[in-house]
Length: 421
Image 1 (cartoon, one colour):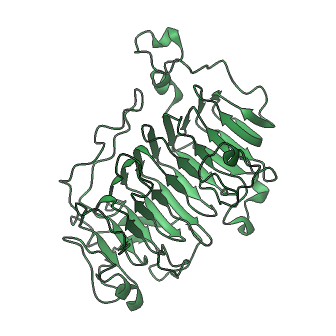
Image 2 (image 1 turned 90 degrees about the vertical axis):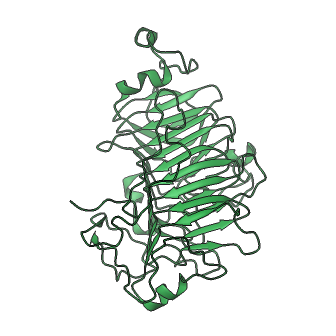
Image 3 (image 1 turned 180 degrees about the vertical axis):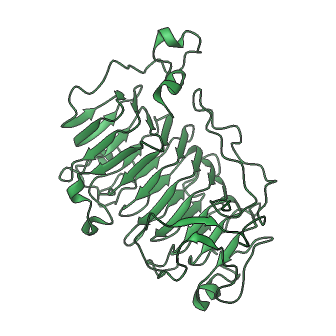
């Protein structure tokens, strides 16, 4: 999205916004970084398109302020101070497909030895953050461990204790709005996201090669109402989705996850919680049209703290290259099957016919190949097997200023990617 297309979003420039209803009057576009090196402390205003911002220590968007990051901005995090991005106000990171915003480290540190990050913190949004938008944004090589001197610990944010590996994104305002669209989360030490409240949309994102000993793709707790659609999860150490109503916040967690593609997840954490989708603690889930290929378990519940009885699961597709994989996603007390799910019993059943992905890739592979193509070819059992009649939480969007960002329409092709023309 071009910056000029979002002028009404923040209603900053009075001359242009004369025809727009006033919205974010606290935004001050005159505040631009005077120096793109050594940025730390309080920040707000605009980081102009195609600039490079060197962050030397923790940065804080104050309450009542907003930071807008335009297309093509690269934010280089210092690997010695391992900065945290604290959002007490609002953050809009607005890249484009051609020119994404990138949170990263210096190029020389982007090596195999840092495959699982820990080189900077993450984006941590306090309960005062009303709106957070990540659009066409890449987050990589983060997830550092907190200490007693960490800003997040001192402010009582996230888990507020030392020794915690930070997620790429934490959001915590039950009355707030979070939209994550067309983003990439990769090379993080543990969870990609940890969400404890808000009206939420995750759509068309990629989560891959994350987590050493733990780590979920999307981790949702109580206080959240969310649509999660058209996301690719590859080689997350634990689950692609961990869905829970833990935390005793209102509203009850209600997650509609549909048309996601989940591959090779869970195998690098050979414990009870390693898997693909984990449901627990009275979470209200609706799971439709999801494609599981060589993923561990499929949908698994906590048998001691089960999901809400209203939960609906249907029209999901499962594929396993070998018999051991097929055996472990067969329905049981723990493994949940849904109505009209496509679940074979023999190795190789229900080949999704990806355009280009070797189905014999080792299950514990944690290296992503950008040339892989997960669209499905003619003859795939995924084509036409999905359901489209369910109602999403946010078909009209979450109402983020002038741009609603609606959750996408479901597809009758199971998975995150359409059939190849």
